[in-house]
Length: 237
Image (cartoon, rainbow, N blue to C red; front, side, top):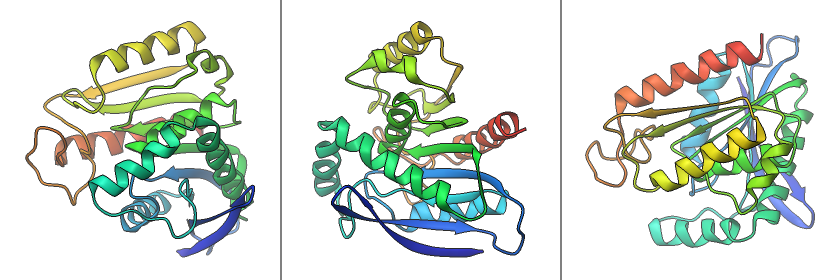
């Protein structure tokens, strides 16, 4: 596996992403753009990228925050994330810049691409889809679903799969219902799976296994990873 950091720019902002793919064979393959959680591109995102490479995909981890900005601790992470939740045009621009980098990887078939994201990253992937980006599919894991411009769903070309916890207090039922309404009205090809007895951050193995707000759930983690693989087999067939 070839894996390395990649410097690139969104406008005047320096960004640093992470590319990973098997460079031992030449055929083009589907590309997956991975948006990490609120900590930014780091160890967890890189390990997920390696798991995707083992499945046969080429991966680029997109940097929303900018090079060198990797917050630590809940307060710092929340503050950095909120900058972009309040500024969706910049968030979308950073997402688009990451998408362009994915398509530049030498092994990527640019006609077969997906964006996935964890927590904040799932929201970023959905916002990229709302721009009308030529994605084949989008997968969000325990992700927020809100958007200030739900009418933009009419631009979505990708198939959508959201994999959330049914007990996730970070994504209230009102937000989920609003997302369903948005998808229905725009006639998007979408799916939403909610895992019982599962809260926020359920795929993140470094989290405690018990918690009312966020906790790792091994069963839901495994189920969601299989659901993503089945979705990819469908959309990339």
